[in-house]
Image 1: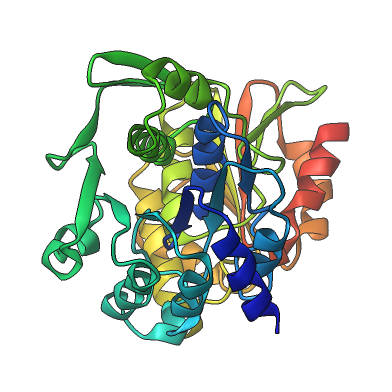
Image 2: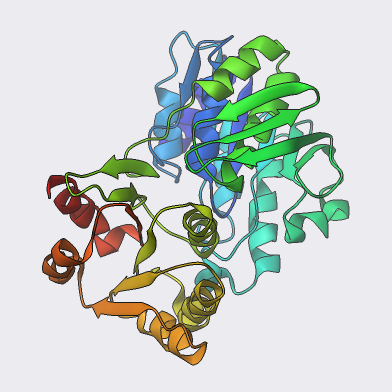
Length: 361
């Protein structure tokens, strides 16, 4: 029923359809790509991350007088993207990266890559934009061997970012000879901008409009939102969700900043299955080599982070709480002026409540 109607509706439109998949960064890539595309075409995009077998057809059913469509495709198992791409028949397919999200269901990164590559089955003539710095993609380019455009910072690619300057809340860089600034920190958003640039080029959008699309992009709520409260503490509210890769990016960003104390508040990363202990331990050992002054942990799986920190002689503050509300009294007394604190964990850990609490004090 629903799939047939969405397929039928899609076939009525002869407009560019851009589809995005990947382990992390799908939603933010979709938002920045749509921002670029909308500078030339009236653009429909996936709302939030309604990227599954219900959300995607419903997005297509919202088509009216649109001239382009940007869709996000998520998956937990084999066959899901195959279904979505058969409905959407994308003209441009984007694979942001292959990480460890849903490794509990799929069993290996090779399998995750295989499941993501289903995106190519909807339209054999589609242009494909891939992140050439992602090891899994880079090492398996021959498996993709269709109409590929690569983006990258490290590996030689069609579109590359150079002259990168990291600010804490933005990044400046060049693509070809043009200067860009994206209003979001961390390497992930440079990759997102490169994808948006590559899509702009595929759709014959002028450099000026591509630049405008990248530079007017704003992050949605609970994504790297900067709050400065009455105490003078800078809070980075990134509570929307969490994966290993996105957490590592955020930790790097905090450790490079120049605040008096650099603090991390980390909730459990959920849905990792048998890999949970291993991934939380990796986070602990990663933090122990970074310039971080204190770690506040919330949940059950974070005990493995604590364990690794102790094992690696991390001799700064470590505090652990069962749930986010238990931490409030402690934080109220602990946080001072000129501190920066990152709040990040899976959505189910409800750290957004702590962000709201800290905003008030």
